[in-house]
Image (cartoon, rainbow, N blue to C red; front, side, top):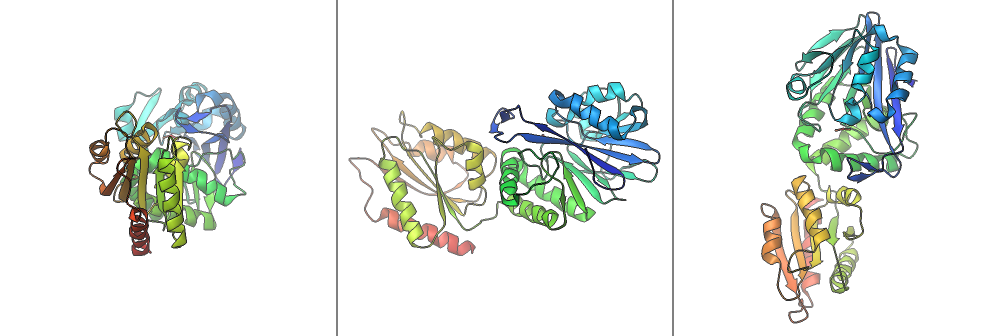
Amino acid sequence: MKQISEHLFAVPVVDEETDLFESLWPLDDGVNYNAYVVRGTDGAAIIDTVHESLSDEFLSAVFQVVRPEEIKYVVVNHMEPDHSSSLSQLLEKAPNAKVVISQTGATLFSLPGDVLPVRDGDTLSLGDVTLRFVHTPWTHWPETMVTFVPEDRVVFTCDLFGAYGAYPDLSADDWDAYLLEARRYYVTVLSKYARFVSAALGKVRALQPKIIAPGHGILYSGERLEQILDLYGGWAENKAEGRILILYGSMYGSVYSKVDSLVHALESMGVTVDALDLSREDWSYAMTFVLGADAVVVAYPTYDADVFPPVRFFLETVKDKGLLAGKPIYVIEAHGWASSEQKIRALLDGLDVREVFSFSAKQPLPLDAIGALAQKLAGIVQQHA
Ligand code: FEO
């Protein structure tokens, strides 16, 4: 537990047991669930809770700073269980508490206790401190909102600005490593809702917060607060960062040799390039490279006359998350007895597929094709610079 301003206390708990967030994304260094206590002259509020596996630790920290009967409100900014599944346990101990949730949340979910739906901009008073609710729908789920305390200029944003990793004191020594975990949280959890994230960013900026207090990760203030807002702006736009991404699979080396030639050709032109082997790369890390790529090259051997499975399923996922939208895409396919060109074109339908290069032992790729592709990719990076 940590006091963060005159009226506010943070109650972070660290989950070091869960191996995969949402049973999908690796938690090599754990994850925080951050809840908060707001204490005023006329009662207290709890902002979000934590995963139920850590509710004992959470409740004992909360009751270090507030008596159960003082709690007037429990604010549910977001209903996903990592933030809400200790709600029942908290309400059992806090008999006077009303559950505050957006109108959408009150409509969609069945909640325990006495529920108080709030509209965008509604406020509740705790005497010398106010809670203002700002609806930010689809900053993960449709019901999401942020809660602002104007007296201390602190905004509680739940998933927005969250990060993977364990931060028991809500700070990070290695900012670059932290930002990678924030980026990984963004691509895995929020990127599908990028346009809503952009809208929410505008609303958060308009509040002019001094502190951003998310449901995962660290507290942001000063320069880091500005940086995370700026980074989120770029991420939500999927803004080109001046690099080419090659996503590939290779069974017997023929695809890898083309990838290697393309990497060398690009590097010799001074172009930054990342080549990721999707048979081995963790998807969540690979997704952090898709975000911000200027153009994407997809290279694979056919498998059962179809797109190589690790490439196929990854592309389906990142397309669904909107991460490939607007990016020039080039495909290099090594085929056996049948090409998968129609299948990859169907898979990438609606995206900016520029060319599909298909080769085999009987139909080799022309010698200069890789060099010409590298030129085109370099031109794209230059155009974005
Ligand atoms: Fe951290 Fe959408 O839950």
